[in-house]
Length: 228
Image (tube, rainbow, N blue to C red):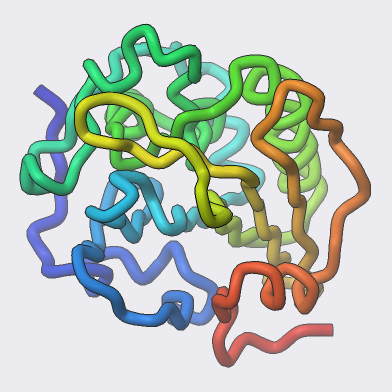
């Protein structure tokens, strides 16, 4: 059984994963729940049964530790979520979609964090080729950047659903049409984002600006944070 160390309510227990300690400004809608993990935070939607976003704080030390951590591959249903709001392992079975981490397993610096990263609350249905190809490259490039950075780098990752996007399984887990990954260097105060279609023919293109990402998703991911 995977253990969770925090007993605090909502993001009060894990504000360290947000730049300036302030979570993204998101419109409040029904069935959203704030979940703290040891190395990341999730805003979960009981409507899509996926994350709305996942937030991390990375630095050179955490990435160095993650290099020696063995991947577990033991996905599990997050029992902190009501049954009516969560994905189940059976939803993904035979769906043709991979269980795509939003906070990557490759970022996890210890065994507990690695195990927690396989919660389905941290997962979206992802095209297998996109997941293992161009999206994996974005994750690796982000880690390489963190290794060069002088301090903490905050990363927010999430799915985007266009009208009519499909769903999988008996619980109707929504399949995102796109994925985004925002990177904010707290030392240089610079931010940029990756935007990629959740599709077999996706490519790792040039990053877009924070402003462009904000316009596309309609969320203020870095409220009150200084930007250059």
